[in-house]
Amino acid sequence: MSTLDLSALKAVVTGGASGIGLATARLLAERGAQVAVLDLDPSGAPAPLLGFTADVSDDASVRAAVGQAAEALGGLDILVNNAGIGAAGTVEDNPDEQWHRVLDVNVLGIVRTTRAALPHLRNSEHAAIVNTCSIAATAGLPQRALYSASKGAVLSLTLAMAADHVREGIRVNCVNPGTVDTPWVGRLLDAAPDPAAERAALNGRQPTGRLVAAEEVAAAIAYLASPAAGSTTGTALAVDGGMAGLRLRPESR
Ligand SMILES: NC(=O)c1ccc[n+]([C@@H]2O[C@H](COP(=O)([O-])OP(=O)(O)OC[C@H]3O[C@@H](n4cnc5c(N)ncnc54)[C@H](O)[C@@H]3O)[C@@H](O)[C@H]2O)c1
Image 1 (cartoon, rainbow, N blue to C red):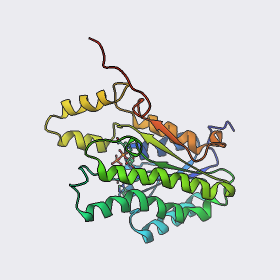
Image 2: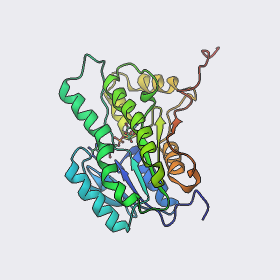
Image 3: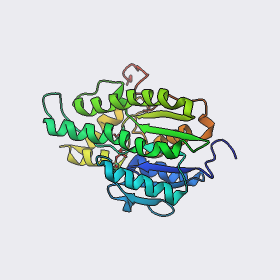
Image 4: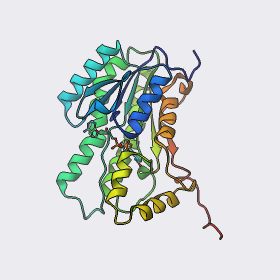
């Protein structure tokens, strides 16, 4: 098989019924993997994707769904920890309950799913975990204190997990998307006083001048999950239109 080919590999994608997760589940399946989607509402993930209802903030639900998915697939090689939720505001704005909720989903969600998947991943010849992190882990964005704290934790957790499991043959990496054109961002734009102006501002924040496509993030995740990335572990791959690394002068008119 070519090293980007995923035939015979079995994958679980959390938050796989929408946006980046759905694009990833589709691409992994297109490359030959058998894919199970774990989501609060898996109905958005059509066949051949297998759907399992799971809430990553509930340990029993995660253990049950990962067990059922591994059984249905006949093992597990790839885990994509993608489920996540957002929060807007400065450090003054979000109540403690919201801090607990967002950290519970975005950080502990990865802990719970990985914990349940590790016994299966240890039996794989090509075990890989990819976490969906964010540009918010590495750049200070306004009005994103809680969300950024959660994604900073995801970045550090990715490195720690990569160190802990490298000698078991399990690679762990993350992707750091910029602003991606998904239903999530659509909801944010719909809620803005002037959605067109808000979209223009988000486009303009990225050096490429446009939002990232969910399929572009999926391509990075599929690469990191594939045997082609066999020597890559403990890295964060930016898929952000140049936002993290470039410093452009304003466009001259
Ligand atoms: N859209 C962006 O601009 C962007 C940028 C950087 C990172 N991300 C990250 O990408 C990931 C996916 O975002 P998206 O834009 O595709 O969002 P989305 O809202 O389109 O999809 C998220 C999916 O996760 C599921 N989900 C939410 N909470 C869950 C829970 N508790 N248990 C199980 N499933 C749950 C939802 O049902 C949904 O299907 C998130 O981790 C997000 O932080 C998004």
